[in-house]
Length: 104
Image 1: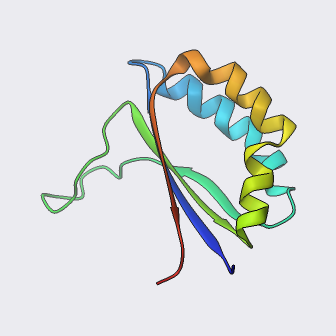
Image 2: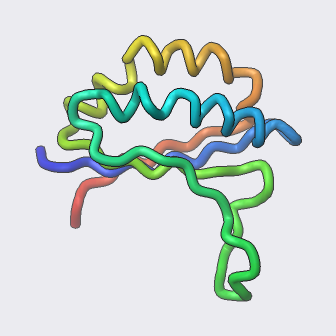
């Protein structure tokens, strides 16, 4: 399988997004060092876009990822630094939806 894209929608418990993003961003260099990681970054709503935007909300951010293969993504999911991140943030996350996508 060729490239795999991921859009993860992460909703923090109310008032926890800033701290959650700090922990996320601290983990990014370890993710970028993984074999097969092409892109991995968090995004939030852009202010003042206008009525055509559908905001994700003040407690939510998305993680946009691109991986060289499904195998690389699956290795990422069980990497030690991801397990540590999961333990450190589990009480800060109210909801998480992971969309794994292939090029159309």
